[in-house]
Amino acid sequence: MTSVHLHFIDNRRVPSASGETLPVVDPSDGQVFAEIARGGAAEIDQAVAAARRAAEGPWGRMPGVERGRILARACALIQQHADELMQLESRDCGKPLTQARNDVTAVARYFEFYAGAADKVGGQVLPYLAGYTVLADREPHGVTGHIIPWNYPLQIFGRSVGAALAAGNACVVKPAEDACLSLLRLAELLAQAGLPAGALNIVTGLGTEAGSALSAHPGLDHISFTGSPPTGTRVAQAAAVHHVPVTLELGGKSPQVVFDDADLDAAVPVIVNAIVQNAGQTCSAGSRLLVQRGAYEPLLAKLSAAFSALRVGPAAADLACGPLIRASQLAHVRQMVHEARDAGLAVAAHGQIVTDAPHGGYYFAPTLFRDVPHGHRLAQEEVFGPVLAAMAFDDEDDAVRLANGTRFGLVAGVWTRDGSRALRLAKRLRCGQVFINNYGAAGGVELPFGGVRASGHGREKGLEGLISFTRVKTIAIKHD
Ligand code: NAD
Image (tube, rainbow, N blue to C red; front, top):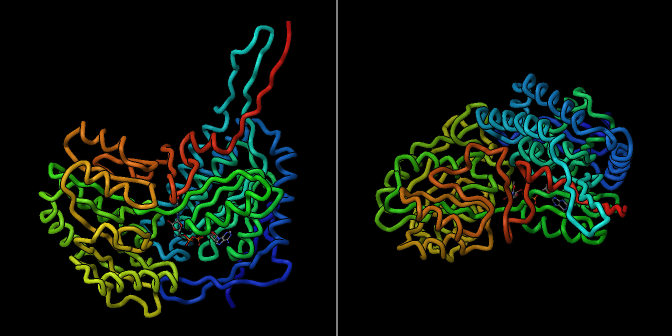
């Protein structure tokens, strides 16, 4: 018998009305090790009603300073339970232990950051006609929905739900069916920290059942979705029926742009990590490598050596790369790579799956493709696996044309010793974040994050993320 993880509604663990469950698979060996409740419209209704009671009850009336204290206690509890959360996240997502540990550190940091910010976002007094005082007050949306993917459950919960709670919203969360366990445990820790019943509710289940019920629910005041562009479109369409505002954090095909004058030795480990971290299943993965012609062969030689040294194995072995999340993701990555090879694209180097990796795990060796044509699918579409597509460019204009030449626009890296060029590029790149001589800035809880075009819209993280979970109410007072 495997253990069944139930929904979390009104600070209690509750089963589905149907009693149905879904299996939880360990990506490292393909074996079922637990079950989750299979929620649907009934459980989403129950969760939204609980959130509404909280939003209109003591939670909604609680001053920011007190909300902040609860979130600060939650941060401390996360830190105290770091090992347990790391183990859960690692097994459920197939994340190497060190990477899962980083995610626990990040979620604690989100709660620390938003705890401190909960009492610091205020409104404005606006100049207006004589005899008026006008306030632009900031208030929470009310009940917020959060649909979370499987690749970084803890981190995405931190940036989205952490900010929404700090702003005074009551939340209904639908985690991905592939990875819920750490969030269900986190919900218990938040209740232990003093979060009142209904302020946070988690309904597990399939995207097409619980997810679509949440995105179509008329009781929401805002919905934040992180996931793939096609699902983002469906969520936005469903929310539009009830005029519910939407934040979309979608995918990317983010470029690393390396100029001839760059410090290649500094760039190599960062470029490798940006595509291998979480087995490439990262929305902001640096999955395209654009290199100025003079540095192309030297950089590819260094990267080939680094890729050849990469080892892939079970999460518990804590290697550079773990398994992919599920069999269908492995099939998708394999198919894209086979198509590329069939089209004659050259593999410059690849890593190795360790010989004792459990049979049945979803392993894929990190692969570096060279001379990838800009229009090829490998240079245009998300692989969501550890596959890097390299190509050469001639000059700055060429670099900008290639970098901006996909339907996405999430993140970009620029590597150069020329400060003016770096800033020119940063302004011309069409995306939400630009990193100069680094990539990812070590997580950056404080740094607003989000995309343009198919990468989504709206911003999370930092103070900007907190403000996104509020709305302005104008109060015009006429006096003498
Ligand atoms: P997905 O869109 O399949 O699933 C994401 C979430 O949406 C899951 O919780 C899923 O259950 C739910 N869902 C699925 N169908 C739904 C529906 N019809 N209605 C409502 N909800 C539904 O994405 P995925 O495969 O789990 O995640 C990978 C994708 O997410 C990649 O494209 C990646 O780039 C993107 N992503 C983006 C960010 C970001 O911040 N921009 C972060 C992580 C992942």
